[in-house]
Image (cartoon, rainbow, N blue to C red):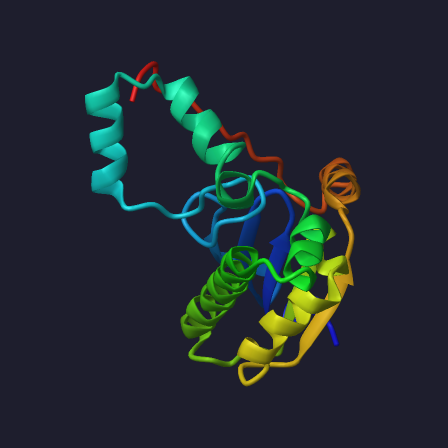
Length: 190
């Protein structure tokens, strides 16, 4: 089928986890790595009042807080590793806390996928799981079990970000797409 005729939920499972809804060739909604499921490195969505309190009461700088939520959150915070294979090994060795955290991450990924499916009234043609974590059959099986009622799940494992960026640049150079400029101005302190 043609990408421009489909509704897809695409979830990238890497150091951060993002999910996006592609409808008829356009990304129309997204759950970024700072608002959805936690991941190996990212804290994911956090209760905002607690975060504000932490910033205000501890004097934490913007840079320190960003490091905590982008590099030292998720699996790293809970299990002191970002390696899902290590977490899976711990589970096989009987580590109940590792299993709890692993299951929570899979559950929250599944909830993000289900949440995005509502944007197109559940009319999703396929769910695509990609990124390095998509190599994990146990993890993708757990997510698939929870979301297969929405649409068929396809696994496209691997980190293809640079290839995707190159293809995007090529489309701009060929005049097939317009270039966009995004600006970001970080805060100095929380």
